[in-house]
Each structure stands twice: as structure tokens, then as C-alpha cells.
Amino acid sequence: MIDLINDSITRINKHADKIQNRLSIPFTPRQLQIKHIDELAQLGINWIAPLDARNTGLPTASIDFMSNTATLEHIPADDILLILKECYRLLKPGALLSCVIDFADHYSYFDKNINPYNFLTLSDTAWALLNSPIHYQNRLRYSDYMALLAQTPLKIVTQEIFRPATFDAISSLKLAPRFEKYELDDLAIVGMRLLLQRS
Image 1 (cartoon, rainbow, N blue to C red):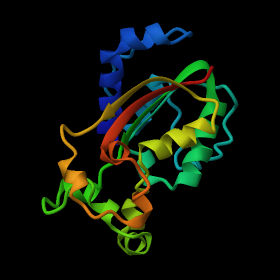
Image 2 (cartoon, rainbow, N blue to C red):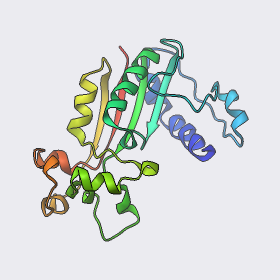
Image 3 (cartoon, rainbow, N blue to C red):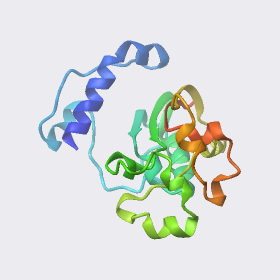
Image 4 (cartoon, rainbow, N blue to C red):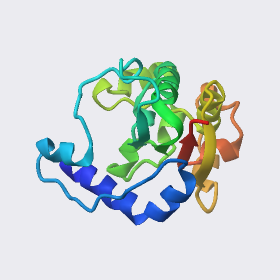
């Protein structure tokens, strides 16, 4: 976890000018790298995990910036909506929420016999048997996330969508019935970066 925090600090500092240009509040980058969880206080971070992200109990409009990376794809859709609404409540007016979402079948990262769309071939029943609660994947597609966001007051500031050069890997698969209703372009998206804002 320390490595992830330090990576986030580095990335935020790298884009400090862009962040400041988009914020309506002052932003001061921190050049610190931490070695122990107790040092988070130097960054103004109060470590309070574990905590229910759907209902934190934290004060309304109390947070300047929120970030999650490769997290939302591991949360059920109903909970994502509650989390996004809670994020909106917690953000100060003008504050930002950064989301990086990985739409790929995560097992394809270490099993080279399957491609990033493999889990879209499985029925909900089959996927329920294989979808480990330790590494749960919701299989939501781009349009599903957009539908969830539309149910919140969060505004999309920027979005970067990651698509393959060709749709060969997805178009050759026999999709599970659940995914037959989706447009091919929607299914082919393997990830996105979103920057959201509380107005």
C-alpha cells in the first residue's frame, strides 16, 4: 500500500499544473515520499480504513480530491452508485474525483490462453461460479458506468477511453446472452480514465 500511495503522490505532482488549472481551490503539490503508514499525517491524510465507502459518516463537502485506480471494476453496480453519491456528498464544491477503470478480464493478465474479453463469453450462472469474492469483477461496460454516473450530480471534466486498434479479439467471440445487446464499440473498450467534479 505504501508503494501505491507514493506512486499516487508522484503522479499528482507530475500533473500539478493541470490539476491547479482545473481546481477552483488552491492546490499545493507535496514532494514527500512516505516509508510508513504513520507518515500519512504529513500529507494531511487521516488513515481511517476500514470504512464503508457507501456511507462514510465523514462531514459533507470536506474533501478536496479523491482518487481510485482499478477499484470500481471490483465493486457490484448497486454499490458503485452509492459510492459515487457518497463521493459527491464528500467533495467540496469544485473538487475532483479521479477514476481509472479496467474493463478487461483480469485473469487474462496471467493466463495467456484467454483474451481481455473472455469473461464476456460466460453466462451469469457460470461467472457466478468462477467469480471469486476475493477478486470479484463486475463485468460492467463503458455504457453501464455512464448510466451510473447519469444518476449522480457529478460532472465529467475529462475522459480518456482505451480501445484496441482492431475489434478482432472481441468480434470473434461467442458472447453470453447478457452482452449480446451491447454495441461492439462499447464491448471493445478495455479501460478509461475519468476526471469528475462536484459543481
